[in-house]
Every structure is written in C-alpha cells, then in structure tokens.
Amino acid sequence: MVPIKVLIVDDSSFVRQVLSEILSRDPSINVVGAAPNPLVARDMIKALNPDVLTLDIEMPRMDGLQFLDKIMSLRPMPVVMISSLTQKGAETALRALEMGAVDYVAKPSVGLADGLAALAEEIVAKIKIAASARVRPLQGTKPAAPRTSSGASFSSSEKIIAVGASTGGVEALQQLLTAFPADAPAILVTQHMPAMFTESFAKRLDKSCLIGVCQATDGERVLPGHAYIAPGSHHLELARNGANYTCRLHEQALVSGHRPSVDVLFRSVAKAAGANAVGIILTGMGKDGASGLLEMRRAGASTIGQDEASCVVYGMPKAAADCGAVQTELPLDKIPSHALELCQSMSARGVRV
Image 1 (spheres, rainbow, N blue to C red):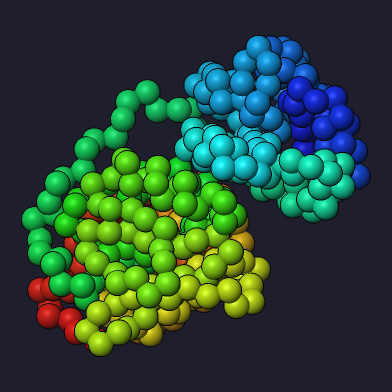
Image 2 (cartoon, one colour; image 1 turned 135 degrees about the vertical axis):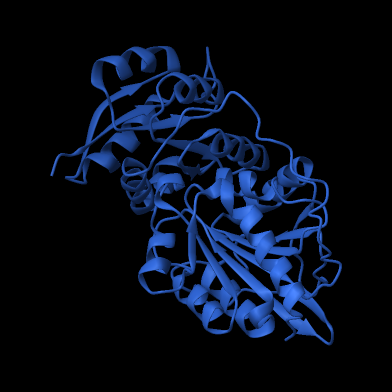
C-alpha cells in the first residue's frame, strides 16, 4: 500500500514538529514536508504533490482561509484544518468546511504538546479519511434560490424530515437546507460536531436559509418551517407531547461511537412519527445512522441516501444502503425536492400516527 503523502502548513515550528512526529508514527502516512506559510506551501505542493494538506488558519502573509480558497479554486485537494478551540476559531473552521475543507482538528490553546499528543489518534484518523475523500473545485456561481413556497400545505406539524451527516456534512447541509422553501416540514438534524461549533453552525445556516434554523433546546416544540440542529455533546431525539412534537436532549452514553448520534435521532423519529417521516442520510465516515434509518423504514417512513458521486465520504450512506435502509439513492441536489414530494404524498394519503 502506497503511504499517504502529507504536507503540514503551520507558522509554528513547534506545531510542525509535533504534528510531523505524530503522523510519522503511522506507517501508512509519509510526511513529505512542512511549510511555515502558504507562500512556501504553494511551491511545495507543486514539487511534492501531497495527497493531504494540514492547514493552520491564523498565519502571516496569507491566512489559511485565503489559501484554502486558492487551493479549492485552482488545485482542489483534501485539506484538514487546524483550528483553535475558541468561539472565533469555531466560526472560522465552519467557514473552511463550507469552502471545501474535509475536516478540522480543534487545536488546544494551552498545553499544546500534550494536547496534540492526546489528539494523535483523531488526527491520524482524519488524515486517512481525508485521503479517500472526494474534493471538488469551488463553484463560482451560487445555487438557484429556493422557492419561497413548496406549493403544498405543511402547516400541520405531523410531517417530519430527519437528517444525519458527518464528514463533508457542513457543506452538504448548507446546500440541502438552503433548498427548502419557507413552508417546508419541520427538519431535525444531527451532524457530528463539537459542542462549541453547533450554535455557530445553526446561526450561519439561519442567515442563508428561508426556513428558520436554530440549535435545538430540550422541550422545544417542533414546528414546520424550522430546522433544529443537535447540540454537540448531546443526543437529539424527537418526542411526542400530546398532539405536538418536541425536541428531547440528553447526554447518555455514546451511540455508534458518537454523541450526538444519528442512530439516536432516527430511532426516535421511527417511534414518534412512523410513516409521517422522511429520513435522509448524507456524507460521512462510518456506520452511524444505518441501523436507525432501517428502523425508520420498517416503521413506514420514506428513506433517502446521498449517492456516492456527490458524497465527500461515501461511508454512512453506503452502510445504510448495504443493510437495506435506503429506499432511494440520489445526488445531493435532488434530495430536497424529492423529500418534499414524499411529504406531499403523505398529505394526499392522509397519513396519521
């Protein structure tokens, strides 16, 4: 097996050294170089042709986001961002993910050596995932604006769309949710993401979507025309409260290796909404969501998986398809309209739970 060629870009010589030592311990990774800034990195990319780039965000001469923009426009390649675990760092990392970075590592602000060493397994895993990711050039044009109305009535709170995503999900959810009209059914979303990131993520989506987007709160009523994002470190479930749906949050054990877990969300939707739901599984590594989506299908829900060609990482959708959980596999840009059609057909059939 040919080792993964990695180029490290960070203005700190100490961080470059520590990252190089961590990555070099894995025989499947070859650190081909380390650059102190994007201008040096540009020449090293041409000379060394790395498979994956690790990129610091705050650097002199040209910051990481400016360099990422140039990379994704001129020579798309898998990039793992290095972000400080601060609110500002979280917002910048989200912007990077929207621009096409595959993943991020939250760099500790104190105790850097010990902090990075503790993250060694995560860093190596994310490099390996990035190496197999599909990256695309930045699109120069914005997607077509969504319809302000679906032409159907979803004023009832009975219809639910549940969405799960992981690696590549920030960009995918941006594309998915901005395509829904203002009167879309209620949408619940679990995206694997640290706690500090999810509130900023929801606020960024809210600014660009016709539907309202917020970080879910425990006991909050679930309403049409709104999307609810699972907070990092909390599982999100759909619950029944009389005739209404509500969000339920808890911090029970990791499920399928995650909290929030897509499986937890999908299983709760299967129980609370049954045939009134549409389940959507998007790009991501691993199997989280596959068994929960199968439970949704068995409960009468319609299920959709993102197709391999449009995924950054075709892991979770593949696991769901392999176990029989996916009814229809579609490119990302076709999913919103199909989900609305499915919800409209529920209304026509008079589905109740």
